[in-house]
Structures are given as structure tokens and as C-alpha cells.
Image (cartoon, rainbow over all chains, first blue to last red; front, side, top):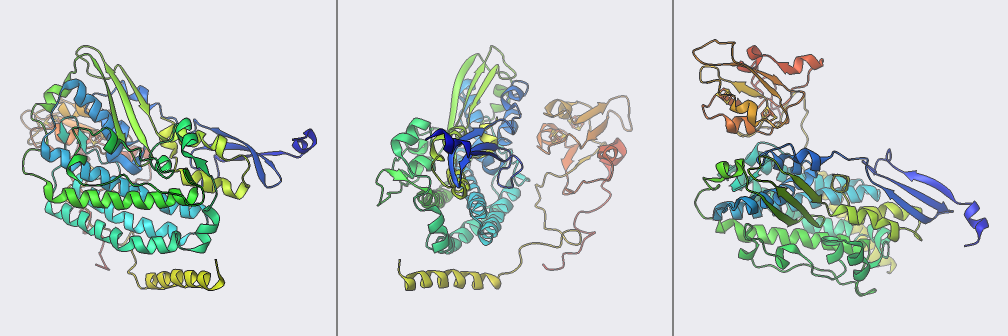
Amino acid sequence: MSPDILDEAIEIWFGPQHVSAHGWAAKLTLIGDYIVECDPHAGYFHRSAEKVLEFRNFRQGPLVMERLCMLESFLMEYPYVSAVEQIAGLEVPERARIMRTILMEASRIHSLQFWWGQFAAELGLFTMLLWPWVDREYFLDAFEELTGSRHAVSFNTPGGVKYDFTDKFLKKLDRALLRIEERLPKFKDMLLHGPTFRLRTKNVGLFSAEQGLRWGLSGPNIKACGVPMDLRKDKPDSNLAYDLADWEVPTVHNEEHPGQSDAYDRMVQRFLEVETSINIIRQLLPQIPEGPIIDPKARAKANRLPEGEAYGRVEGTRGITSLWLKTTEKAQTAYRAKIRGPCFASYYALKHLVPGSRFADFIVIFGSLDPYPGLWDR
Amino acid sequence: MGFFSTLGEIFTILKHVFSQVFERPFTVLYPYEDREHPERTRGRHIHIREKCTACAQCVRACPVVAIRIDKSDRKYEKDAALYFDYTRCIFCGLCVQACRFNALFHTKVVDLSEPERERLHYDPERIETLDRDPLEWRGSRFR
Ligand code: SF4
Ligand code: SF4
């Protein structure tokens, strides 16, 4: 690039006041309509959750975790709860194990529904913002019936779960599942088979599986490249019941560019994720046994933990979410907690992905990676 | 992509859009009507002083220090007065789970907004009484 071209370059800040940039900002260098440099900035959403965890006891800890990403609160609580269970040596009853798994999958569907709406709105399809969000209400109603709160559910606790399933809840969950099953073909017609959406997303934000793995991407972003990397299958957790269901890790194969994925593929991947989640929930619902929902000794055991270290992880909607917990002897609070959110990697992948694309495609690339500010700024 | 296939795709989309027109509205006219809140809704608390034993477990369980207890203020035999600070409370439900004497509950009242910040500091008098039923004062017109 000759220097006189760079003279014409302009720098603009995308965010933090932009409507799509809710809590993040990236500095873009443009020549004409093309982006030559992208510098994502993190830190606008920082709430020092790791420090807060050092001052909360082990029953209060999951509350902090679920506030990192309200869209998948059942999933976000789990790494902390799992780490505490490992250190305290708590056994989770079978009933609680299956209940957890069902709700984590329901949480995944509702999070993806939110993302469809958000992504479509970022592309300018306002109708598709409202439709998935209406269906999402059905899940939120079910969560409210179960726990009493729509987003900050506070459901998992070391040793089991806090609230038992009721008939009314099961009815509401079934209604939510029926609704999404009925509406999925409609969304597919609107998004995947519609020319507007396809023209905006095909061959935009293309990267290969090796690149994605090098940047540290996980979850649907890497599965869209055809890599079946999924913690639910690769590292089965004894406190979750994924082994009781029969399912396959969904992946997408791009015909034009084998081993790579563009924004369109990532959308297809997220449709497949929802179908898999519905499949898992449908298989697990009849398998819930009778029994206790929490280990009776859990309360006493989680009061004071022995010295130890544990690593809890879960396959979140956006990728691998994990937490490393260290405790000292007779600990009432964590000595140190380190959270790994999947979105830090996908946010900084923009740095490599965006240069060379048009300015209008920036938000498409950003949206297709589905980063959530709460997960990169802990 | 031919002209006719694109046209067909556009018609598919239009078909879905028109079918959506006949769906029932999903929103409610909020101040005049309300959605139904389930039994477990974690709204503002109610403190039943007859049963309270001043054990202060609720105060200890609260992650955000939203409850203050005054043990010298006695109405019954061994109860205590609770002060709730709803500018801090996150409605997590830990205090209700911690109370083993069934003296503290959530109610279905979830709209707590007040014109002044001070009015969100509930004194014992207010936390013991429920001044309105959340569903009664609004009609549910379209249900
Ligand atoms: S609901 Fe939670 S935050 Fe509110 S007073 Fe009770 S323990 Fe504290
Ligand atoms: S409300 Fe319950 S937990 Fe709180 S002081 Fe009274 S008896 Fe104890």
C-alpha cells in the first residue's frame, strides 16, 4: 500500500454509542468503503465478577455467574456449581441431573432465539427481530413458572437444583417447544431461503477451521467449519445427562469452500443447534425419575470447603464457558476464581476477519460470530 | 439464481408475513392490565412477624446486604423488625430459602417503581403489609 493511499484513510469508532454496539467499541480504519484495520476494544462492560466471587459464599456464587450472560443463565451458573461440587465431593441426584440438562438446553434455545432476532435486526430485517422474540417469551414464561424469575433464574445450587418441576411448568415447556417446532420452518423460509438474507451473508466473514482453532473459537462458530468439537460429547460430565439421549453433534459443510464457514453457514449451524436441543429435551423429558432434587448434605458441605482446585466447564450457546476455582482450607469463599468466556476469542477474531471487507459487512461479521459483551468483560 | 426462483422466494416470504397478520397480539396494555404472575414469582417480600424468631439467617444469606434487622424492636414475643432496601435487592430468593420459620415470603408484586429513591427503603410497617393485590387493581381485559 503506497503511503498516499493511507493519507486518505479515515478512522471511525463503531460504538460504544451505536445501537448495535451495546457495550463495546471497535476502531475501524477505512479507505473508501473498505476496512483496512480493525481494532476491537474490550472493557466497557467490566463488572469485576472474578473479584466479586471472592467475597460471596458458595451458595451466592452462582448468582454472580448468571449475571454475566443473562441469556443463558442456566448454562452460566453451571461451571461454578460444578467446580464447587468437585471440591466438596457432592453427588447430584439422578432427578436433578436430568432436570439441569433439560433446562440448560431450553436456555440454549432461548439464547439462540434472541440471537436470531438481534442478528436479523443488525441486517435491517426488523420483522425478524420481533418474531423469534415472541417465541422466546414462551420459554421465559416457562422459566418464570419454574423459578419465579424470567432471566436471573438462580436455579442450580451445589448438590442439586432449587426448584422442583411442576405440572404447570411441564405444560408451559411443552407449549414453548411446540411453538418453536411449528415456527422453525417459517424462520428458515424467511432467513435461509430468502434472497435478502442470503445476499448479505454468503461469502462474508469467511474463515477456515485451522484459523478458527488458532484464534481460540469454540461452539457454533467452529462447528460451522465442519469440526465436531462439542464438550457435551467430547468430555461427558457425570453431573449432566447428555449420555441418556441419542444425538449427534451438528456440523455444516460449505460446498463452495470446504472446511470454511461464512456468515450464512453460521446461521445454518445455529438452526441445527436448536433442532439438536429440542431433540435432547424431548428425549430426556420422559426419563425424569422420582426422587430428591438435592443432596441432603449439600447445604452443610457447601458451607465450608476443603482446600482444593477444580475446573468446571460447559458447552455454552456461544462456546466453551469455564471457571477455575481455588479454595483454601475451611474456605467460606473462593480464594481465586478465573472465568473463561467464549466471546473474548470471537470478539478479537474480528481483528483478522474484518480487514478487506466492506464497511456494511462489518456488522454482519460481528453478528455472525455472536459475541456477547458480558462474556468478554467479566 | 433465475428470475422466477427469486420471485418464488419472495412470494414464500410474503405468504408468511400475511399469515402473521392474523396472529393474536402478544403484548398487553401494561398499566391497565397485567400478565398473570405464577405462584413462585419472586416479587417484593412480606414479613410475617408473629412467626419471626430474630435468628437473622435472612440477613446473613443476602448477597447484597439489602436487609437490616433491628432486634430491639419487638411487637410479639421474640420477633424482630426488618428493613428492606429495594434499591439493592436483586430478588434472588436466598433470604426466603434461609428462613426456616416460614416468616419471610415473596409476593407477586413486581412493579416497585417509586417517584423517590427513599420510598424504596421499606420500613417494618410496610414490609409486613401488602397494600394491594397485584392482579386486582388492574382488569385483565383481553383474557
Ligand atoms: S431476595 Fe436476595 S437480594 Fe433480596 S433481600 Fe432477599 S437475599 Fe437479599
Ligand atoms: S425472617 Fe426468618 S430468617 Fe429472618 S430473622 Fe425472622 S425468622 Fe429469622
